Image 1 (cartoon, one colour):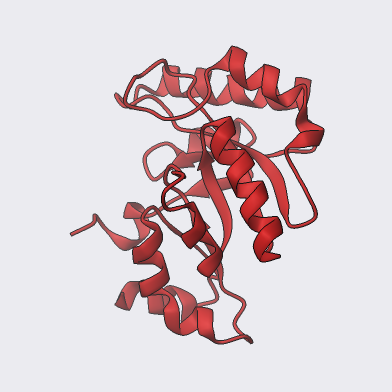
Image 2: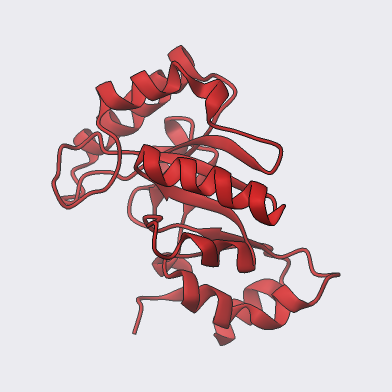
Length: 189
């Protein structure tokens, strides 16, 4: 937590957490301070059972990988009258361990993008993770594919791609948000 405080004191305001409750606890002091400019991103898969906890301080949800979850997020935001922005997560690697929409399903959903936002909940963009093996050529292909989907179907969208090991490739391919944790804060304990 000391490194997080150092980053905050140095001017960093956007922080990501992949465990909803852990993020709420870790950043509770700043979340209670209405004058803080902290922007908290949930960067793990959003699941129906824990979705309501997002409204305890998160501004962004980067891992919405099911249409049911997107609809629940829209409904909950409207009910609670709290703002949140979210990213549809794509699975373009074909890996079973990864969450998200396959290419064809994502494109079909984006054809009806007007149903994916309301007054309180906005579809901010698209998110993808590179292949687990970290192969830079495959990673570049995955990031380029998501960039093309954005260009063709939702050009106003932001892209959330790239982590500590592949963020440079993600930036080259047009990422707006990178999720860098271990390169700055070290590995999780």
